[in-house]
Length: 420
Ligand SMILES: *Cc1c(COP(=O)(O)O)cnc(C)c1O
Image (cartoon, rainbow, N blue to C red; front, side, top):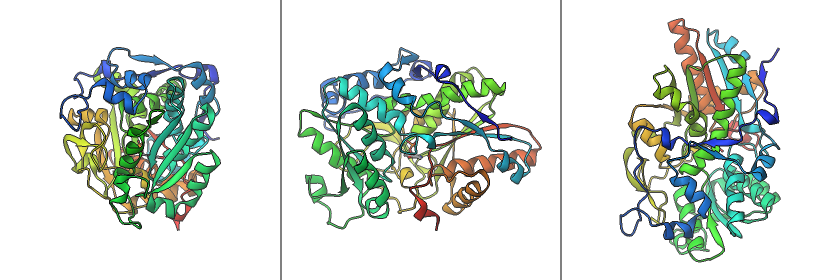
């Protein structure tokens, strides 16, 4: 029998976990790119609505209630299942128990809907009419478009041109949810016009284009799908559910794993377990990133811009430099030059680990998982599978029975061209 841990709606977490008050250090504040001083609230309010800025800076409240309107939408696909990877365990002949939290059941197939719904809702109640954003592989653009339809906001998406050309299904999905998609770099913005018309684009350029549009308009705001504190906050619904599901099994995790692009699914998964780690429990957190975009393992810890043009506030984070253009590997969602300030600070303080994975190791893991577990993973999520396999084999060598949990951040049904 497949071990499949379900929660009922009434067991679903009703508030997000805010890790900031529990951290033994303070995060360095975002800096204004023009003055190099901490951002003023007025300037930030041009970009983000008040409630999200409050969440971003809140280092007092450990739990933040989910409004009823968001809970209602979460209930469309949450709680998501925690599934025992029994076939994988048998295949690896390892003494460990492997569980995965499956976020691919969301309407657009990834964890991004968790924050898209929250961001669209808090924008709506703050009077925003149009949201601008960027998307790499298209998961964020489609999640935000879905959320925009739910709460009645127009969504405009700048999509990195290579992905726009390689992933027409994602573009169609954005259109289905009434979002507008423009390949980036575009002719619409000053930043975009600096590049040749057939430039492949990058997340950094697409963010610059979306930000430029927002600065020009009063009724528009910007939404980011990863990196920022409030995004990780919304994603903690993942880890909070995992906690309850493991409690039902009367299990404690030894290793928790997630793939890392900007840090939102990894952060959402591990942050609720940080109090246990800080109280001295023997618990490891592993962020898995591609060899070709090794932000956490090879980046520098310093202030950097989130975009290429230097419009965004500067964040203290691990970064490969804002001009880093990663090779176009298939895992589009892991091609960001920076990392979440929260994740970066946790790594700097040795509370988490990071490992890199080659495209070969990742795709072997993805294909194996598809065939034996029956779920085709997103190429990004496959890094977490590869991480779990590595740790399961290590434990086998040591002859130790451990509990490994990883988040499968999305399915790969829109990425099948990556599998041929
Ligand atoms: C966007 C995305 C990622 C990477 O983003 P994080 O913020 O690091 O989570 C990983 N997996 C999937 C399926 C994605 O859509």
